[in-house]
Image (cartoon, rainbow, N blue to C red; front, top):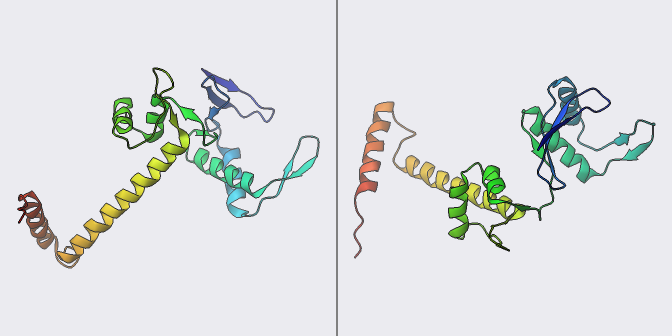
Amino acid sequence: MTRASVPTSGARTTTVDHGRDDEVVFPPENLDQLLDLARFVEGHSEPGLLLGPDGEQVPLPAEVYRVLRQVVEVMRQGQATLVAPQGLLLTTQEAADFLGVSRPTLVKLLEDGAIPFDKPNRHRRVRLQDMIDFQHRRRAERRAALDRLTEEAGELGLYDGSPSEYTTALRTARRRRAQPTTKS
């Protein structure tokens, strides 16, 4: 279910209710106040005070301020945000959306053991923390592969020559990779 609420400031906020206590919050339609807030948090690395409408002030813990900075940055980029506990259980569709893959692709990752899951009944459930851990592992694997490719390109002299030399070296590398390896 999607619902819109109008806070006293007049800004419109849209949230999506998944039937749980978490809410996906979309950026306000008018980004002026958000941009002002983004500039403010960019200019202040230390947390300050939270000021209530009645003038009451409460110190903002550093951990809460870090989350606020992250939320503001995500919304400034026009993206929705969700603050959720790491132990939150996701449906396979929610987990697929989190990774930006199709649900069948996610199910294959689950069944292949790449991501742990629970199946308390007919439906699989995936912990948010396991999704975050998978993203970190996948990112590290991609970086390692890119580092290997960059090293190989350097060894082949791809950074030293002209575009035609690059093309020739690339063809050679492709041919070498396409050749079957023989085991002794």
